[in-house]
Amino acid sequence: MRTAEALCAKRGARLTEIRRRVLKAVWASHAPMGAYDILAGLNAGTGKIAPMAVYRALDFLMEHGLVHRLASLNAFIGCALATENHAAHFLICRGCKSATEMEGAALTRAVKKTLSAHGFVPETEIIEIQGLCAHCHKEGVPKT
Amino acid sequence: MRTAEALCAKRGARLTEIRRRVLKAVWASHAPMGAYDILAGLNAGTGKIAPMAVYRALDFLMEHGLVHRLASLNAFIGCALATENHAAHFLICRGCKSATEMEGAALTRAVKKTLSAHGFVPETEIIEIQGLCAHCHKEGVPKT
DNA sequence: GTGAACAATGTTATAACATAACATAAATAA
DNA sequence: TTATTTATGTTATGTTATAACATTGTTCAC
Image (cartoon, rainbow over all chains, first blue to last red; front, side):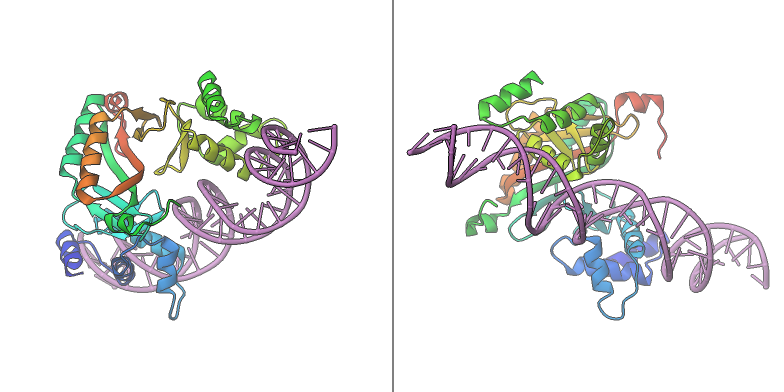
């Protein structure tokens, strides 16, 4: 959270109340959260925030690399490596619902190579592997 | 299309009228199509097909590797390499809306390596790179 | 062939995810 | 301080996807 504040301060970006609350909600969950889950959380007490507000906050947080969107789940997760903007690669476990952000140095390199072979200029890189994490696999989580 | 028929025959899967029509629609478009776009196409003449029917057909076609889903676009595209099941990696051009399926031998290897380093057992592999294809980049398609 | 079992489709309704458009308020800069 | 930009409020609607249950069609054993 300090990191987020520092990062926003450095960039002259405003980490407002609602953005802070959304970020907090996302960080607090180890599992990816849907936008409406986040909304429900914020509205749990004396609620009256609209979906738009959450989506706007998420847009802001994604712009600043504090949150990632998992396209395959329509869900959001706090960035584990909130430094400068980076490609995010995820391992998504069907068993425990966790999504682990992986450092993909080798992977990133392989992607770059493939892209340049095609002359393709990348802007957004989505890599999401779904399956079972080591733990759930060992536990014998069933096929479906 | 022959390929699709042959493949289904071989597996004892039924390539019914509606499935055939959906597959045809998807193949006919070089760009990814939304489910409701497909639906609109089918219903263009004397239409009365419901969304469910399209989604069910798409599920079938995906199961058999004839169609892929692009998670980042909520859209579907015909498989360019309709052989056995394979991981699909896409280059999605923002300029011409094309989605190119790439042979990712090297990439696949890199992914596998990373996964085994994590002890992660993969089931679905989503790799979608968005950006500009060589042609659109040369044309100078603007940033947004 | 007939009937049981399974596979596919029809139908209706609704859930889940996301944005458009315009009004208001708060912060910043000139 | 008033002009400008940035953020939020508000209402409505658009888009994508699935649940649940009824009906029809196909296959296979007998």
